[in-house]
Amino acid sequence: MNDVYSEQVLMPASTEEVSRLLRAETAGEGQFTTSRVSCSGRESSSAAVRRVDLQKMNSVVDYPARDMTVTVQSGMAVSELTRILAEEKQQLPIDEFDRSISVGALVAGDIAGPRQYGYGTLRDYVIGIEAVDGQGRIFHAGGRVVKNVAGYDLCRLMVGSRGSLGVLTQVTFKLKPLPEYSMLRCFRFDGSAAFEDSLGRLNVSAASPLLLDFEFASEAPVQPQVDNPGTVGRHFPHALHIGVEGTKAACLWQIEELRNDCAGGEQFDPDDSTAAASVNQHCHSAGYNWQDDSIRIRTIPSSLVAVAAELAATGYSSQGHAGNGILFVKKENGDGRVRPICEEIVSRHGGSVSEWSVDHPAKSTDGLSVRLRSTFDPHSVFAT
Image 1 (cartoon, one colour):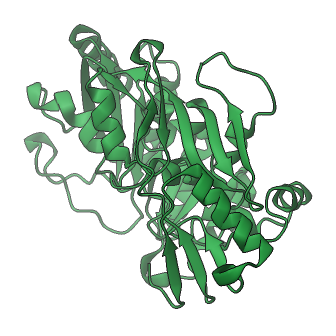
Image 2 (image 1 turned 180 degrees about the horizontal axis):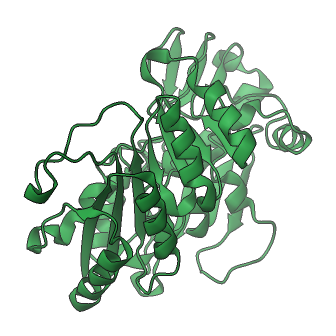
């Protein structure tokens, strides 16, 4: 963080310690009289804050692998959770670019990457939570079994709340098996018409890709691709990255179907064994990161090409998840024109525009958000 304020890092070792810290904060006892508590190290403020760091709370609470669920403390790093699950040939299919991020930050930020097209987002995998609200009250929601549906669905409410409602201390996930094999192919297009036609065919494809990402360049000149001898001298400003998983035979069959679906484009990935791990490589290297000073546009998938084309006409490239209608537009050097342009385009096609650093849930002024915050954090303990 670029800190412009004094910060004290609080490192509790248990849920009960988190509760005591927050109760002391609300009661105005001792050292907790003048500061607020921040539940996310990504936020900034001009005031003094205390930041709750859960790195000491990094244990596995329960892992019945046969039930395909796991409960962990929120301070565990996502990379460590991935390692533990891999030993049982299981996975939480959520792609996070920063592998050192904690499980709690992952859930609070509602972060999901390229494979959300086939696997869904965190709201599909969080089945139980333990958390502490702004008054120091410990509460639970959901459970440790997949079919637990009792009570209010506070799990989904906490996903994406970014620390505005409480401090997550434990999370229970349902899991997926690790795939036997994965393959990724890239198809590039020299025009938006062929790009859009291919997207249309993919909507009714016999294949079932779990990853459908795109790149749509601005109308500025683009260097020709030279890794395919037959394309030298041609410009390919648009691309589709398509990934499949399953058995090797199923992946090979799906790739052949995808070649037919993308017949208007040129394939640029080598058809060899090195592509086996390329889905995973793409998920952790693709630059589609809302937290990286980008504007995020959400629209319906059928409007994606129209939105991307209008952005390109104004000089802005976009990339993102074509199957989900999510576009990211890089905000270079604090360019203040990007968001107004995005909002104007979206007003014609439908959707929403947001920025990670601007559109924090704690700043929402709609009636429901205000009532939720007054219930979970009536003393405004959590800093934004």
